[in-house]
Picture 1 (cartoon, rainbow, N blue to C red):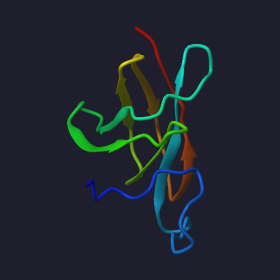
Picture 2 (cartoon, one colour):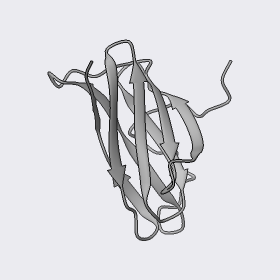
Picture 3 (tube, helix red, strand yellow):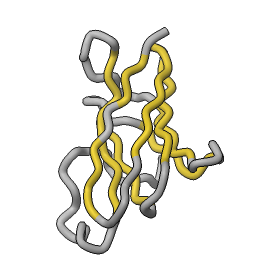
Length: 101
């Protein structure tokens, strides 16, 4: 069993978004439908692997990261996709990743 937290858009009550940077989003197919079970990777500004989670059945994912330039890469049987996000301070930053073959 994976030790990653349950992937939902709702943050746990103990998360202080005034102190923590949270990157959250959904993996979507090109038709806008959620893609569950995708492997979602967090890469830094040099494309170095930092973390990976498995998207929930509704395509949700979440990472805790530092402010900076990040790339989100989703890999699934539906296809692959990449998105970027650039959090500048603590808070919640939403980015969806669209996958296609």
